[in-house]
Length: 199
Image 1 (cartoon, rainbow, N blue to C red):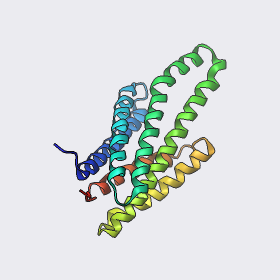
Image 2: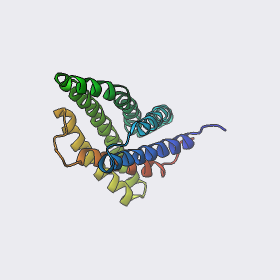
Image 3: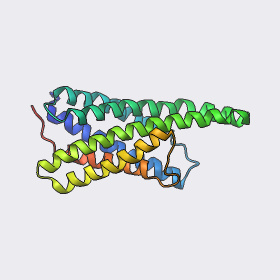
């Protein structure tokens, strides 16, 4: 079965949709059952983002327009692989070391901050893609979905850019950066499901 441009776009949309769902489940577990290990979800996300990097890169190579949106998705996928990798391989050992020797606590704090900086950078890129494809969708007759996607993309870009530049979540307990980023990802996926391939 040939992987046409249309199939590639559909696969990218489905991978983004799956990533938004897993991130929502992760957040729900963190808030309601923090004692449960979320490592399996990270592992699934890692695989999703590896596949997303490949398929978004393929879509970028085949695209005749909207290159900024495709490159933003591909770059975000690569950053998310790094972010998930930091969580899976470093949180545990550094956390154990800090528990054994409290003087090492700043080290786990630094690793977590590094992970969130990558997380915010990836969300900035996905928000940018949401703006690009949202505006394109508005021009293709989908004004409601396109407009909402672009609007949420602007909010997610601003919130995550501020957190990225500050090296921390500048909004404190208000989960605007992460929440708007996940919503932008979901809406971006829905927009892409309506994009016609250029086969």
